Length: 256
Image (cartoon, rainbow, N blue to C red):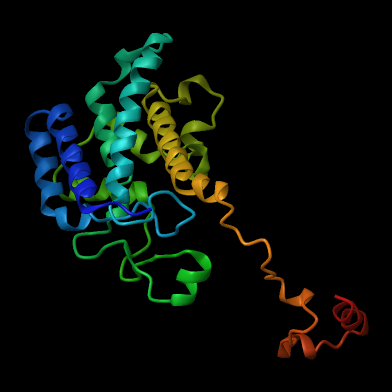
């Protein structure tokens, strides 16, 4: 998917407006200053490095975050209507968590997390338009995001910390200690993490559908292509296959 310059700019304005409208006071000003400081990087960031994932194109990160914020606010109303106790967290905490849930994908002060892929084979065969920046020390996305916030003196509440930490739900085994427990006293004391995860999951699924379902309906997959080299008798076998010592394996290979 490709976004026009106009759409990228419009999405960025929505991103900043969400901060202005939902994060009041000094913390809101600090957050705005932070994102404006890194505007040139964030505005064009992808949300992932690979086409099979969501938002793997310039501007994909901001578009994804905006969708998560919108989804979070709509889900807030639905959870409230269904009887959820909304006094255990604030709407500001929800929006703050949504805005910053994937912040760790930015990298650090000096280095971007995703940089253009230089290996043409990986671009063509694996759909990796971006690659991970090896100048960055490994860190999980939630941990790096929380570190960036505290590094820039932007405070966050306990609720926000847990929500950002667990926004991937049980897709990340590191979250089991928070989300996979049967002891009532160990369960989250607020539904904020669940609402954020639900919004993030919904946004990612919608972005997948927008990117891939039209391609499937257009029969873009060439079924006539045969990528299974071993089944093509006219193709030459690799050196490794020619050196097989087992008669049984050789016979199996010859009959493919």
